[in-house]
Picture 1 (tube, one colour):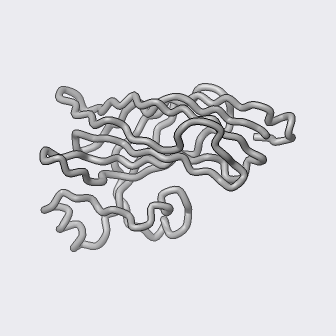
Picture 2: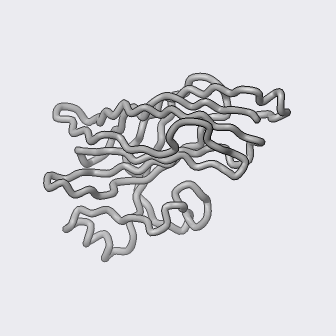
Length: 175
């Protein structure tokens, strides 16, 4: 089977209106893929920058996958959360990126968004400071029904990833 090694880090977040942010991440892939080693999901620590507007996580990602074909190429789902002064955690934004199909070093920026809902949801969000949470999180990485969501652009997440592809030519898989 052809293999993909993904390693690097979730570096930082910028242009978010909230502080005390952390990120939950998860790799999604198709049926032709299987995990050889590593974690497919994780969570960063909370960073509360005092003097700058950039949140630094430097959280490692290290994953080894095997595949029979390129269908269902891996995607990285990202969720940015805020921890308030009482310890409550609220969703801030969602985003995803396709992992690159080329071997080598990649600096990736993931633009995130949040659902805004109806006017009553927006008023409730103003007073409670709780973001709307999706009931079906699969909508983040699929195209189904996402176009019907009303959303607002949020900040960006910066990733620094390396990809190593092995035996793709041996199995006749072209990327």
